Length: 126
Image (cartoon, rainbow, N blue to C red; front, side):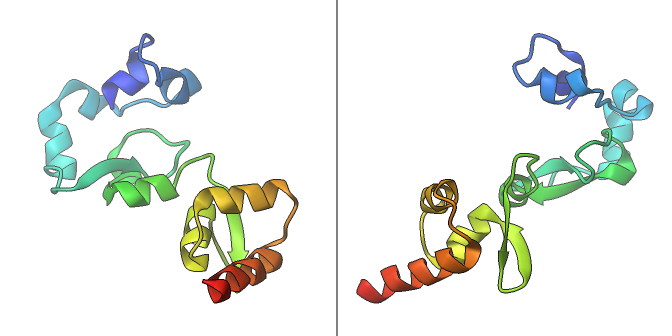
């Protein structure tokens, strides 16, 4: 967390400190205060900022699974599936096709309804 925000040599710095993300003063000064606010990391979870543009501070952080982390990435693409907006990855899971297939279909200009129909056709052949 601190490296991401303050170590300019870190590869991912530009996505954190490089765009103004900081660690609150109490956490920056004391790991004990971080533990007091957040508790120990539960097994299998990672620290996530709720507001991707917000800082690392108690009201903007929570423990989540890696799967949840991936779903909240800035570069996610969202699609409409039966009236619900979901990530492209979740869309692929619901259709039973590979994420890259959805990506290729999007590049070809296919609409969500057409992707759903095409995936259904593929499943019926199998």
